[in-house]
Length: 158
Image (cartoon, rainbow, N blue to C red):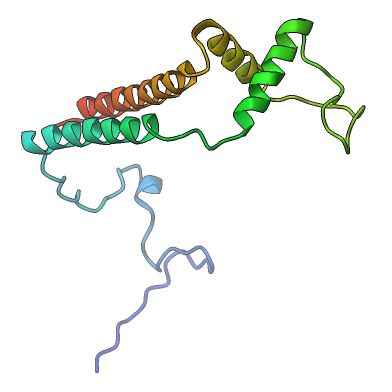
């Protein structure tokens, strides 16, 4: 078994530097870095086309799945009534007048803008058009996400 002879170096303990070795930056020369890892190969054109096709398929399936379902959310009627109340009073009510247990208590309607939009949409186009509103909102969301994803793919260096 061979033993290595240690040099004394700077004599400071706890500095984290090995004895006899000084950091490169302290000597005025650039620090040595590990060799760069090989970069992954650029995506093939087929991968980009497949990604675009998958986004379109996901958007189409989501829109179709949401467009033919019965609206099970009974809060829609509450939101329509709240929107009607906001429209008629020309302001957001601050006191709860609808519930039995909290009547007269302070009411913070944090969904007032959505209530007003839903009421205005249903008043302009009818109750059945709320499904079209939901459909258009979902489609717009997918288009925005797709635009962001395709911009990120184009911006990556090849």
